[in-house]
Image (cartoon, rainbow, N blue to C red; front, side, top):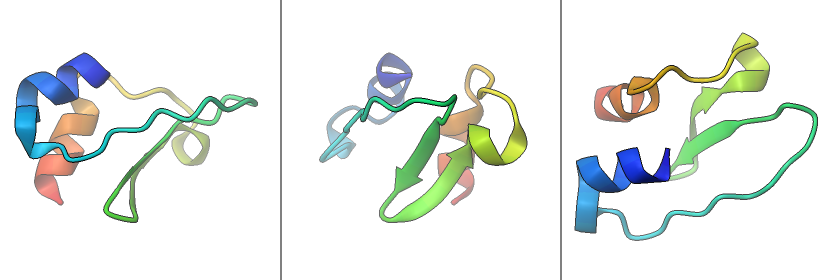
Length: 57
């Protein structure tokens, strides 16, 4: 995921933080807005899905 984001956005990313969690929680938050939540939809993101959701934002 980190590599995919860095490849797409490079130096446009000011801060990228991965916070370990338990219970199957995987969420992507951009500028304080929830972009993707595994917990809410019940599955992990497909390849490219998070980047696409960020672009649509």
